[in-house]
Image (cartoon, rainbow, N blue to C red):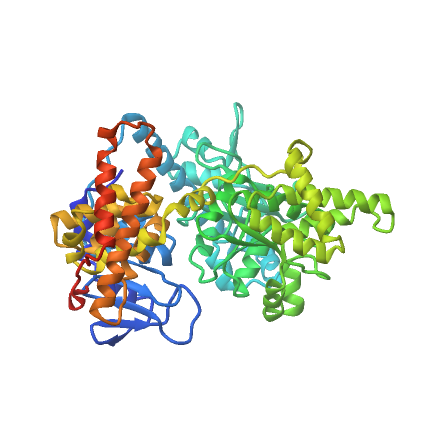
Length: 596
């Protein structure tokens, strides 16, 4: 549900951007602006600027920009709705209730009950860990090097030898039907309900909003299985969640670190690597890769250094690449896992291993090479063919060429020969089919579509946002329909609507976009205002940009038109005449002192 615009605007106007950002960044006043170190990239000299009058921020280093909603969405990885609700609570504004159908309300009520039961179960396990019965489990955790603070942060617990969670929750007033939905119990007609987990260290599994949605349990003893996870339910799907993401999403690191197990994640967070996550006892899934892509394009894989771990990494690489992520593989040799490595060599050495991580695609070639005897001419030839097939699976021409160059150098394959092989498989198509990665969707496809957002369209929108009279100067020449890029067309629609109504408020305009990525791109376009040394240069540059956008738009529409009817073509001919008029010497004027 989209909240009414007047509510969104009330929340924004009552949330001063300097006060909000000042809670995260040390700001110093510099004239009409406030400056500080950018929270979105590492820097020593402040390039981050916050404008109270415009209620906007902009970084001259990494070009992050936006309004108060955008900041929370970028900094805390919130959705637009989450940022709105947070600011509404802060400003003591009551948001209108969302209305559901009967079926939606019943499902929402069941989900609320599911989360409530899991939260109480987590508290129960947490409590037992600190009792006499949990001494062995506590010793296991402390022997693994976990501090009391880390145990508390991750809500670790113990399920008890007698398994009395069922009795506890029944005493809290829940019936068997409600408890069955949680997945925490099994039921027998004669015995009733019994705990699924007993005599295990308990790891609460939380969603990105830190709500407990399931559990992982490590047995204290020789019982099998060693690790046991909550079963799939209507509200818990292991394929769609990652352990530790609730903390990793707020990390200042630009990458996520993907591990195999819960203890790996917890150990890494304790050592300062707070962007670590893990899949939930299963191989990496497409859903988990898509979830990670919401937060980053860079993922470091840290699986066990044994063969099973390396093969798991090989299987994960194409899943991540298909999601638009650049995977890198961290080599922990001679240690087996992150826990062992950090204890033996420390966090600083681990950081160096991260910096030396291997490109994921090249890692798969390395592992494939181990399957061949490179001293045997026939096997070496087969390896080269397999390598060419895999490179042929890369859709982007420039990326494919880069891998040809690198692989040729690293594997001592003649570049011309490898290129010919790759081109042969590209032309054939079918022989490389088993190795071809599926066409990328989601963010990757979106990024390609955004190539239509030309520099001219972006610059013109920057003029319109910076100079109020730009609209008056161009309204007879251009409209939002003349912007054809995916992002620029959306920005133009919103910007022109506000310019027509007046006055322009860029911070308010950004609330039209709910997705963090779109809002950030729109903010960058509208904040990167033009610059010129004198009035004449400003006017000439402005006029040239208008001519370019008009020409591009007219050509695009004429190309799409199949009719040759003179009457139909007349508007295009008239537009071309006006373009020639501007080219002939007319200059559109913008007063420099008017810049917002």
